[in-house]
Amino acid sequence: MKIQLNKITWYSKWLALALFVAIPFLGFYFGIRLGEARQYAADIFIYLKNASSTAAPQGSAYYENVSEWQTDRNNAGWSIAYPIDFYTEDFYAAAPADDWRQGMPGGSGLRLFALTIPKAFEPQTNFSDAVFNVGMSGNADAVSRCLVSENASAQTAASKTTINGTVFTVFRFTDAGAGNIYETTSYRTIHANQCWAVEYTIHSAEIGNYPPEYGLKPFDETKLHDVLDRIAGTFRFE
Image 1 (cartoon, rainbow, N blue to C red):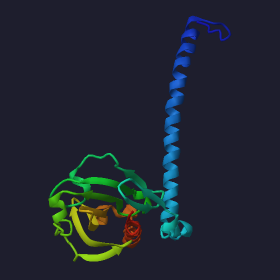
Image 2: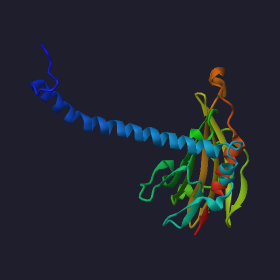
Image 3: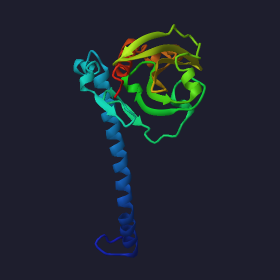
């Protein structure tokens, strides 16, 4: 059969109809994928730029200058500042839950604020992520246990520190399992008959679990602790 390209036929009509229907969907699909790829690349660029103390000294200085950070003020009478390129979430209408702080049984409370530092902050290392939380509870049992640590796993002695006029008891402990390490630093205080917990957990993996050809290095623990302790140091009651 000879196909005449300049003649309208039944199959050319069906082809035109199929293209008319398919092209918008294909354009939408690939547009979404392109947008996701661009956003991912932008996120990686930001974190690589700010995380590298040698390649981007200005980015490194930003993490040390809390006056340039974003400040979160909510209606619970407290505030906290944090680097604007970290992922944050407020739980203004959250229901009481047991995960309002790490490793403390004895009643539910409110998880008020969460911040995540992603793996891209320390690329090509055994760092997995870090989570920073602010939580509080007025449960009588929680308040009575507020300044006592129930987690005895590799725990160091408790210490005291003052943050913006409020005295906090500081606990540090480590948990490990299945090749993962979780280092938690918990700042706790009793304020207005509520137990408050301002704390973070750094999650990393045993570097020996990775093949040498991956070329991974141990993550910079000092840098992570400095940034997270600096965030904790901006917490204040208002």
